[in-house]
Image 1: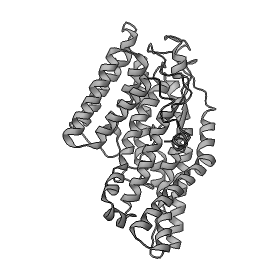
Image 2 (image 1 turned 135 degrees about the vertical axis):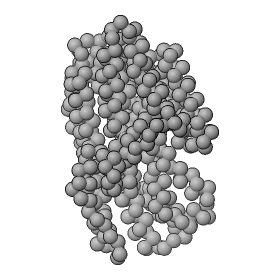
Image 3 (image 1 turned 90 degrees about the horizontal axis):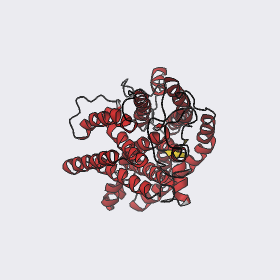
Image 4 (image 1 turned 45 degrees about the horizontal axis):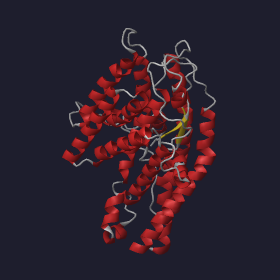
Amino acid sequence: MATAKPGDTISALPNSTSASVLRLLPLQRSARFTFIDALRGIAALGVVLFHAHAGQHLPSLSQVVPGLASLISHGDLGVQIFFVLSGFVIAHAIGGNRVTGRYIGWFVLRRSLRLDLPYWASMAVVIAFGLVAAHAVPGKLYQVPSVAVIGGHLAYLPVLLGQPLINTVYWTLCLEVQFYIVFALMMWLVARVPGVVWRELKFPAVFLPTLLFANLWAVGLGPWHVPGLFLGHLFFFLTGVTVWWSLSSGLLLARTALLIQVCVLAICGFARADFALLLAAGTAISIYVAGSREKLSTWLSARPFVLLGTISYSLYLTHNPISGAIFRIGYTLTGHSPALELVWLVAAVAGCLLAAYVFYLVVEAPAHRLSQRIRMSGGANGSKLMSPALDVGVNQAATVPLR
């Protein structure tokens, strides 16, 4: 997702029930990171355009305007933006807390309520569209997913189990969920670093070895590759965490780690012509610059960007069946030509945005409100080991990208 997942507006977890393991600076006095919203919305829109191209809906237009085809064919790189943003915001949400086993349980429950309901509803939408297409389109076949396949999706394990995806975008949600759990466990370990260790070094004592291990995949030396396991993408998430650590702690060690991480991604990206690595580095730099200038709540804060970010999770979940239906109906009515394909591309994007807005109002927003009823608890002793300024930086609402 994280995702950190699109369209996911998350109130950071209250500190009143959990002690900090870091001395943190106020990241930003803001109730909403509109810059993060905008990046997530743009990334989601890129994925929509990518699937219009990958679905071979624009054959004539691609031949006439190859530059446009080349551009939108890289829209899938929005996924890497999602991962970096998820790392940043999940870290911002819980990174300053002393995480206990009970805290993790409440965190997982809250995330589940927030993400699962739209996810389940989107599966119903995809299946419904498949059944309608099978009846309305001559020669169109659609096989309803088996109980086992649906169960694998509910557990966020379809790729690991070798099951076909109900919707091609779901693989990223599986990785997002794995990161959420692993990062919460990392913070649980941070809270258990012996007290003799200087407080500011407890987090890097756990985080830096993890980042070093994750970067084996960034430099192409990953020891194993398991489809559906997030290890090959973990460094994207941890890049976002590094940005958060650098901005929130103000430590030279954190800023140095961020500089090294960006250089690793940039060097490997240029060496291998890997645009995903380059885009991840660029995303990290943009968040750091915005945060260091206290512009996370003002840059790209125009209403269209905010709205796009708000519905981006819904857009990500629902755009495939919506755009496919619009293209099929449109070309049945008019046939193909470069001009007509452009018209139907605009219509498909507009239809996806409208459908995502309705889905957000009907499904995602109620799920978010339901998740907010879960009050986080289970932190150690309910005390604080940080400066009061952290209350501003961590207890504000932030926006998480999910895929």
